[in-house]
Length: 302
Image: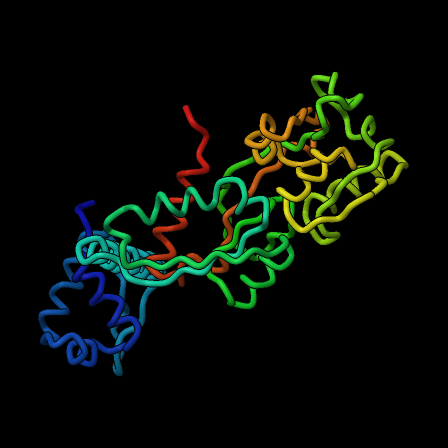
């Protein structure tokens, strides 16, 4: 089959929507006979009738209905290509609001966004990042208060379009002189006998740990509750409690704070984050470019 002509497909869609070749010609500023000639050539190309001629107009055949669906998708893609290329040529302008969990922000999100904004083509894009717990990220996306969200992929992502982003690994963090520091790896159950410093009750890490402890028939003893990961590490440094935190967050502080970081071997300790959007088709050009960039950042490195 020869290549399909987009102009002819656009005329075919207009004829199907108006059910009338003459009215389609008025909308497209082209005479009806020229449209008829193009449609006849299209039927010859696909090898089957696409329209049924009736006294008061035309209707698509079953084959025509199928082609109509494909044509709309092809034309939408072509229009999107045109917008994207125009955006690159002129420099994209826009504002993108991201809702993200504290883990995502503290680990790599700021670096990934900074890399995106250093591209000269993105100089007129503004990005706002707001910290929320996972449930707040999802609620904000569904309510339309932000176009992009990043949270733990074990959250309820039903109804959203997602892309994998980065991952982290939870570990027990202790002072170097702590009895647990001699271990190379640990299971959470081995750390439950010690008091811990925790993030707020609504944080994803705390919820995960409480569920995991409950499955062992034990509970977590909290001595201190803090608002940030850095505050938790400072409490550990002071010797007041141990903590369970992502390795990627704790590692930069290990030498300065005199900390031991012991990875957990529990299967749930390896966490994966997801980039979430409510509807990719309605994203602005700036938001789509950002999502594509973040998705590339999350791809495994060779």
